Length: 109
Image (cartoon, rainbow, N blue to C red; front, side):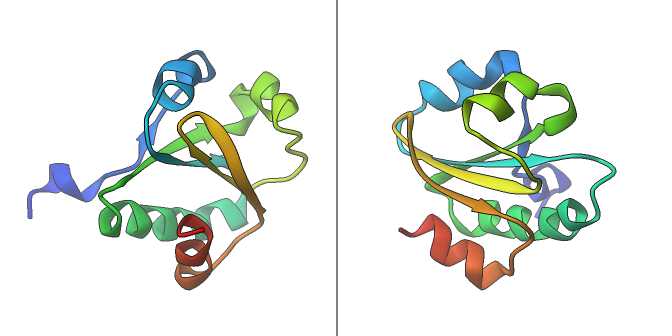
């Protein structure tokens, strides 16, 4: 496996949200995180594993510190927060660190 395929999670900016998420067909898992957030660091490898195991799901990360408008839009008050969207529609929200099995269950709903 090349190193290029190891990183499946794409970091996007708030300006790219519409194009990368809302206009995307199918499921998109969004990880709102911050570099200083310990639970976010614990969740990062879990999100990466989900991206590797679920080719059908697009996975993106958004730095919460730089995305206050998006945080407000989705009512996010704590991080890490995962959003699951399907065809641009919000399907579910999960707040806090989670195990691989918990996130798998979350994305399969």
